[in-house]
Image (cartoon, rainbow, N blue to C red; front, side, top):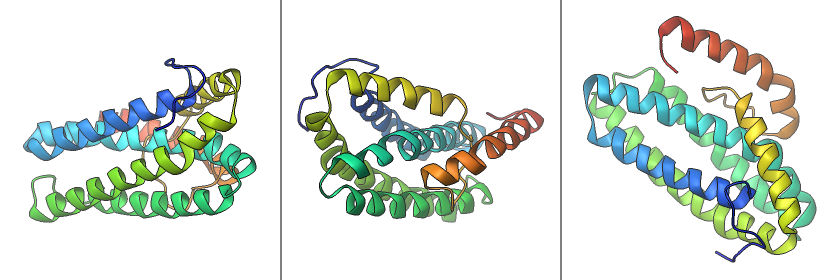
Length: 186
């Protein structure tokens, strides 16, 4: 990946790439665990995926569409992948975490998410790092953190655009956080 102008935890590229590493670790942790530990790891994985994708959909993808010569094509491909991942996550939520079907679906999701992250880092993040100033990347990083703070904590397939996140996101986030509090997960 090309080096951005500034390497810092608030640079949007550094922030999101770091989260990709956390997501990969949580997949490994979830797949290695069983019972309550697997359920706990899956809830954390699901939460991180949900807030991470919201930040990308609200902050990174709109900027990539405008700034990159092939931005619309790149973003459309990423949004399709994100929709597929959210659909699988919703299926996983309904399964017993110790079932063979859960393990099979989670393994497929891990492979798809790792490929998705590689595409983002190569086709979107590195190009934004080249096109934008360090100050712009820092501002986007702060915006991504804010988007995550108010993002839904569960996947919502069909909410993959900036406009859809703005319309449904706050309400979905409120419902998700209430549901998490009621069931003691989150």
